[in-house]
Image (cartoon, rainbow, N blue to C red; front, side, top):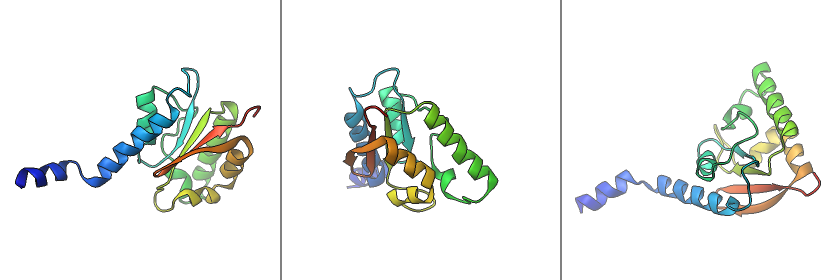
Amino acid sequence: QLAVKGGNETWPPWIAARSARVRAIVGDLRGRVGPADTVQVLDTSDGGIDALYVLGVREPTRFIYDFHFFHDEGQPVIRRLRAELLAALAARPPAFVVLLERGWPAGGYERLARFPALARWIAADYRLDREGDGYRIYAKRAGS
C-alpha cells in the first residue's frame, strides 16, 4: 500500500493530465509541420511548449508563455509586449497557433477577448482545426 501511495504522489493526476495533453498536441501536429514551419503557442505552462520541443518546432516569436499579455493590460510595458507579439506574428505567420485553455492569473479560452487585436488576427487568417482536452489548434487558412 505504501508503495502505491508513494507512486501516486510522484505522479500526481495533474502531471499525468499534462503529459497526456503534450502527447495529444504532438499527435495532432506531427507530420503537419515541417522543419521550416513555426507554431505559436499561447500557454502558461500546461504543455504547449513541451509539445513543440518534442516535435523540434520553433515559435515565430520570443514568447513561450502568454501570461504577461493578460494582466495590467493598460500599462505601457504590456502594450509594448502585445505590439511586439503582433508584429512578429505578422512578419512570420506560423503554420499553427496552439491555444491552451488554462490561463494565468485566471481565465480560459475567453482570455483572448481581453487582447482584441490578437483575437482579430487569429480570426482573420486562421481556422479552428483541432480541439483536444485543454487545447485548441488553429491552422493557417490557405492563401492567408
